[in-house]
Image (cartoon, rainbow, N blue to C red; front, side):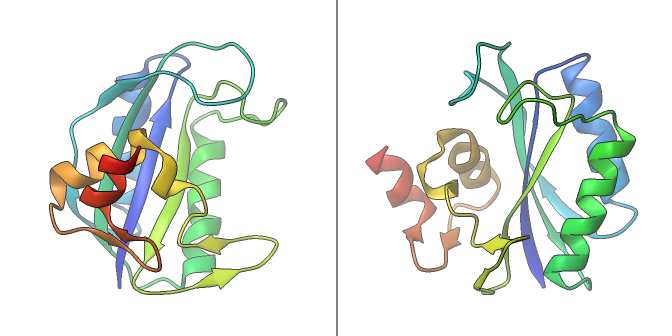
Length: 147
């Protein structure tokens, strides 16, 4: 199934953190497209450094919950800690879309519940998939125009 994953980093060597995450993800899914990195301002949370953000497209044989578990393991491996909600982080991996799956439980919500509001997700995604859609929300291009 086609999956969309957003990557972000604002601690340490941000470029290396994103590259390392992509390499780790490529061990478990087939990465087909990767956006350039975008420098962005933090959204919400405490005062913190600017982010680098990117989006990748991939094909995954993993069920969405299994992919999420693997993504959390990659975050941990790359030094992510969770002391402060929405705080600074070495790496953040968000599963945005997994095929047309609609899931909502304590562990996972698909499509990602705030992706349609986040320029730092929509811009890099549009770069690599001009026809991108968020199920139930619409065209990424149109959503970006509304922000």
